[in-house]
Length: 401
Image 1 (cartoon, rainbow, N blue to C red):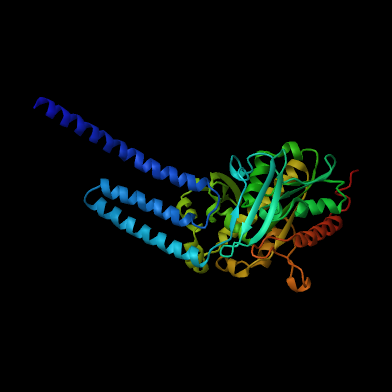
Image 2 (image 1 turned 90 degrees about the vertical axis):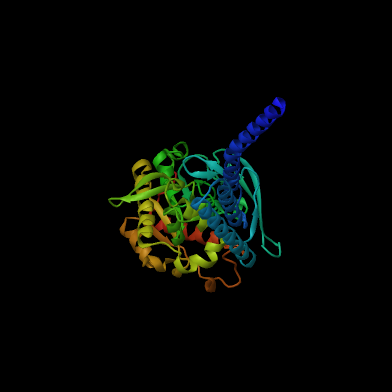
């Protein structure tokens, strides 16, 4: 009898220990899964997976809670499962192309948020969502400084290109990027640096200059900074875009952008995750999307401050290459592309409108079909426009004397 009681006590103790362990391990497992998805490459199904994981957490809370908390958890789980279903429907009806990325191509990094893990050649292939036909198959060479490789002069005056995937040259071979073509126009007799990377916004440009992370490459060499941009960057500087969680965040204080840590440290982090779902892009963004007036003000201020630092630290001017994209995107802000260009110039920025109209280039693709990034031909035209502008506005700036 005593042995039976002792065995039941031990069994009860083990069950109690298991329950206590489960209370800790289950939420930890769910949180770990969420973090794993956050670090993983973009997937069309990422949003649905986030909703399902959140639903699993709500179901777990419904199991351990009682009373009203249990009821709330059940309702939350039901809503999240429903959202996962809507997200799945959105993915199936508006599936985005899928890109396979080489390991180490883009990882979490301090200061700027993300970037290449190591030097080397990274092959990225993008496929159409339904047909799986190849949209592009490109190999990106990352140099010893973890930047896109540009073959140019290793000494003498240098031009520093900053920007996002347009500047980096997503979907293109090394020889087809805007910085490389610009270097080729000068017979590679000047130095050209490509600091662009997919997903970057103006805040990465400003943060790089504030922290001096590229000083070893720029000190004594930089003669010109070039930043390629479009209105959609206003959604990046304001941390609205879902993929900007790790990016630097700035706030306007007295008309000046002040660094406030990373985007994910702001209360909008859950909103950013939601903004990266197909559900948001299909149902919410067409009605409520786009930057506000304040977001555009911040966007312009960040670029103006970066240009000011370029002048103060490196005694070099900054040229903004502006691309007009989609006026409806700016509707909520009250701005137009023309207003933004005017505001930039009023802030002291040198702005070159590099918008290309398809009717002027019959038979030429200006954007990679099925993708939207600039083609090598578009980069060639913009590089020539940039060179002509620099030589007119800053004669002798890039001479070796």
